[in-house]
Image (cartoon, rainbow, N blue to C red):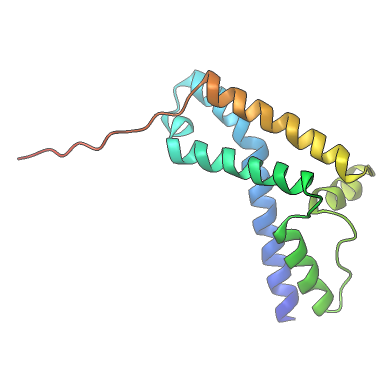
Length: 135
């Protein structure tokens, strides 16, 4: 039961990371136009860029996400079936009945990563300078 609880927690964390990566781009583009200062924060943008960069690198290296592998291992230890494919492949197939080889996902990740890089160039993040108010 403990392994299953950890696997479920990892599933939620993984889902949050996917949402951050996928919804982060429209948040940046829309938020920049609407003047939301947080979408241009340097660390938020760098984290977003790094997240999609890691996904792209793993896809080209033919590796599944460490969260997928860890969750699958925990599920197997709990007596459940682990993933046969990547996290995204598993859930897309489950939700949309779509199955594709890993290279298709690598291509999709790359396209999305290029959009993130374009957004970085188009609406660059702002680095806030820290000022001390001497009283």
